[in-house]
Image (tube, rainbow, N blue to C red):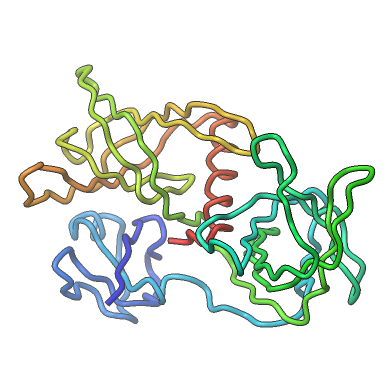
Length: 277
């Protein structure tokens, strides 16, 4: 069974549940269809999990662009070359498209130089447009180098689309530093991230309800910054291993507009790379 953390913010109060909720041992604590009466009831249950395949909106199939969705020029696209290492994702931007003929995107830079691509190479494209993630396979029609490096892609005959939740979570692997109210600092690893909070693994950093700060580096399209966020511990799952590492669910608060934009962009980047949690 593939379980993932269930944020309290994603669980509706006063409405039937769309999935079973489990505790840390994998035991069902609330069945699908049950109605949660209050937020306090959820907090008493502790850390919850749900089946990953039931946590998201269903995948829809259709043609590009999706009905009712108009991709914007300059939107970020993530792609991988199917005949090369499937683990490497490249970032490009949408230049435009001609319906049923071609899609134009920029050629990404690698160490300051345009990525070497070949006509006919098969690629998988992912883009977050509006509140949807769109995935389709295509091939390079032609590489152009003037006036800038860009490429024409075959117009996709089909695509998959999935609607994102209001506050989507992304699987990440980010090194972070956690500072407690008493001034202690610990190295942590963020494994799930949203604009509202994070799930991180760390040595003992505090108890439920305590205030902390979470700082980590972020990089996007050649830009770099350090996010230093005010947070509060919402859930703690104690570990049994010798290293005494525990899993913490934290909620961000008083996030600045700049940091909120960085979080959203970072999350969408990881989702576009296949990291939808």
